Length: 119
Image 1: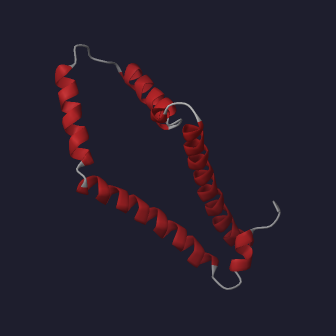
Image 2: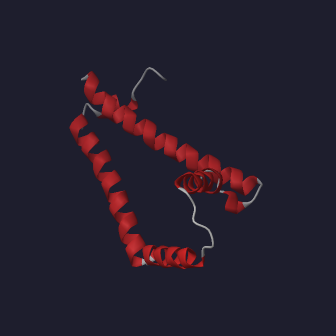
């Protein structure tokens, strides 16, 4: 199983260049769709206005090290572990599903792009 590339069978009917182009186009469409959704739902406007309010209400200026620490903690704890879901089976299911999907996408892209090198 680990020695076989499932995309090599597909490469007999579809060129590796077409498969690679498909992966690149899908990544671009996801990025564009995300940006369009942020503009449509005015998420960016909300976050920028919220940042201005927070800056005006601040009583202490944070250094770059403190800002970096806060960003890292937020990324790892809140986003990386979906802490807003609380503890339990629901959170575990979301985390495993999220990381499983990400690993699947990355491994599929690696297989598609390595296929071209072998041919």
